[in-house]
Length: 311
Image (cartoon, rainbow, N blue to C red; front, side):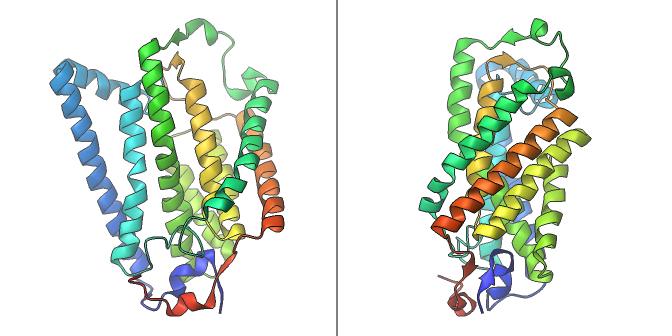
């Protein structure tokens, strides 16, 4: 029988109910180990070049705002760490025999680059709505004070240039890592126990929202994106649509934030939540329309159930 995306673990001959749990433990363990190594190497490098005070200053900056796009070292610390989700989840799945390297990518066990390219225009429209509606909605509805501009400090040119380069280089891996972890592994793990796709869409989305240290409105904002990306993963049979929108969203958000030194992490608001709701709905509609015309594979071929998982 053909298998929808969230049921792909079930299709593997070596599947056992407990394997996704162990794979999660292994993947998370690898992620934390790699993250600690990455972060300590960065801090040691800063210490060696700038001294102990430079290290303490960076730690303070990270604690104040892990998403400070105006600080290249904070970007390197945060984006580099999150990017490690990508290999960690792939290796966890592979070690437990739950599928080949491309298991989490799509129903054909690889990223479908042509389909991914077709999602770029809808993603640009989505981001244009996000930014455009952000200008329409009053600043007070988005949690921005009227005197915010008066307290802003411009990012030094060199720091701005380095931040932009790091954002363009690392965000694709950071965004893909989150998609592989929450939409990829999360959906296939839940789908291996419960066939109903709503469960595979909603439960990982809750985890995705609480993985972000925002207020309630910020978590609802993130959850809206999570539901949209998860639905499209199920609807199109792969992570491509979610990855494209996630990359475009984060690149634009960080690039817009980079020119101004940030003293605290941005939070959510009712206005921003409504903007995301509208833009996400538009993206889902556009991608669904493109999918109907171009027909990406929505289910795995029947042969997947007898495929050699070592391949």
